[in-house]
Image (cartoon, rainbow, N blue to C red; front, side, top):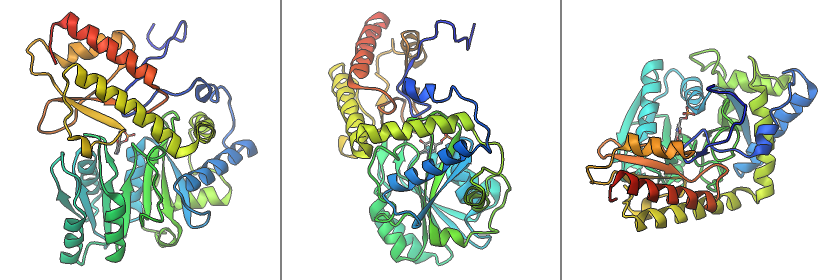
Length: 374
Ligand SMILES: Cc1ncc(COP(=O)(O)O)c(C=O)c1O
């Protein structure tokens, strides 16, 4: 029966999320705790403190605000509840997640302007600086750190220095890399950084979070254009009685707390990044040996997720390839690049080089079965 737990076996998720999690993270959810329970409130408090530390910030300098929903909800929370009515956001785009921020602003009526780069090109800090010099009305700049569309890394520190020098507020969508790519919010001059529970911290889906610089964030009271995503009100609730304003994802929070403990045990962000990088290197070497070609040049490619071009062979069909891998319990991901047929393989989550080698062996077998040459 679909969804039955009888005889279940985990698939290995080589995706941008949700990701493979440890057994102990899943086990942490085998408890029912009330949302007003002092133990639960303590867990939430500890999660928030650990997130601030993970962002390389001092307590009091930045605030961690948890918000129910997927990662997009947290991005929408920042864009629609921390930008004043007379604010204007410069949205820097080189992939689908940058474009999604434009849609969020369009739907909510947040004034914005887009600065778009090709999907195989990092966002250019000098062009952003120029855009700010050209338009005094821009108050905020929004950029994606790892554009998961391709896996490209954007230069968030260089952009941050210029945004800061121009006196604007800086928002970074670090959804797919926070926890695995060392990032100091203070050094990068980031005012709001967003990620979610089910990415590199290796929790389960259920909420996202923003790490907000205390002083500018305190000025955002009353800016919200909606109720449930109001970041300032959420913070006030969490600071006041320690509770979420509306039903919290209790089990996902217990899992996330365990995931944060396991991140620390692994050696923190550096060690996690090193494991993902080793996964990436094993993957790319094995895929190249079979003839697959990455979409991005190597010097632009991060170690989070890789887009591979479809093989030119007429015997290749992505749906068939995907479904044969899925039958062997390996889950990869469709592409999102606009101008090229690609699929994606993620290196993040509770996966190791042995898992990547097993995936590569399955890909080799399937290529033979389907009769395509990469
Ligand atoms: C960079 C980036 N931003 C936003 C999102 C959206 O997150 P969600 O699908 O959890 O809403 C993702 C998801 O992979 C992402 O990689």
